[in-house]
Length: 245
Length: 176
Image 1 (cartoon, each protein chain N blue to C red):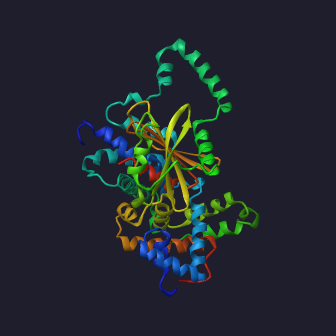
Image 2: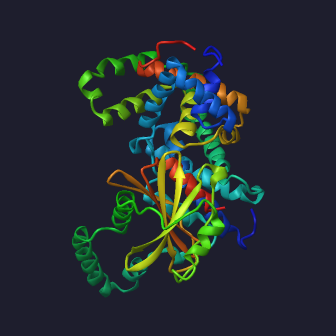
Image 3: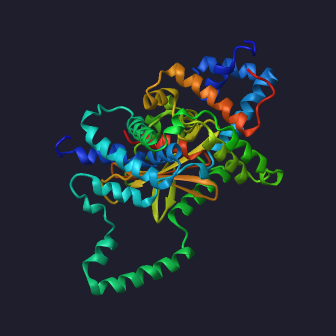
């Protein structure tokens, strides 16, 4: 390959749109061609800036509730219990508000679940204890959890979608044992925490950033999921989507 | 419209998770938060109406396509100049001029610079870059959302990148 042909090939490479062999070809070329490799690097730099969280406009909270109200049939069970409470009794309202406020004031002292999860993610990377079972095979990882947990986590390999399963481990969060699935995305590690939800409902994805790590949360099929990584939120959400057919 | 049954439930599971993506696209296409909210709401109602015709597959691309069309109708009605608009050189050169060395040092300022450059691009270039780089869509998905052939997606993406880079004043040494 000489470097006059490339623009499109190079961009397709940058966009992860090349097949395996073509990717290897381009990589070999990049290793020897300074012009192309600086071209790729320069775009990667711009891309990193474009993927800064400030450039992603997340939907305002009130928009979601507005839209939910437009759904046919009022799905009232989505209303948080405390709201129903407040509306329920005028007298109780004041007391509840006071209680909520005091909870809110006290809250900063207690680490949020997301902070716990990020701390656990960071520990897993530092302590060299990322995986208890190393396998890219979901049929090895899933049975491994048997008997170690009181639930069977959904284990799936998404190698074909660019998220190969690397293994699993047990962890402890919010006073319960949880399953952790480890996925790779290029050089990034994704810890996916799974534990049984309170009910069978589903929720939309939420994205949070804690200490520079992105946390995507969702609920589906009776499980709570938290995917944590230093990977950008768009790709982390893509993994989440694979769990929501 | 599909008469109730499991419809709302399914709609909720398939479509609501992409609310951020929908809003992000609308916000980038029309620029203002209030207008973007209105557009998403309208797109959502359209989606609800057409949901009976949704045959499965990529629900994000499906929703984004509706959001995109709604945004374009809005632009056509409220900012028709934008559709004819070529690259807004004057608007941008101003911004580059005020962009001094000290702001460049901060990475926040960097992404601010990228944001401005992106906002100054013509609608179609901005759109393809937002879909690819910010929303992380594949060529195939972009083609689904914009209704443009895959080959055209590639070339408009390529041109958009060139424009953005010119805009940022970081064009590489070589013209490929």
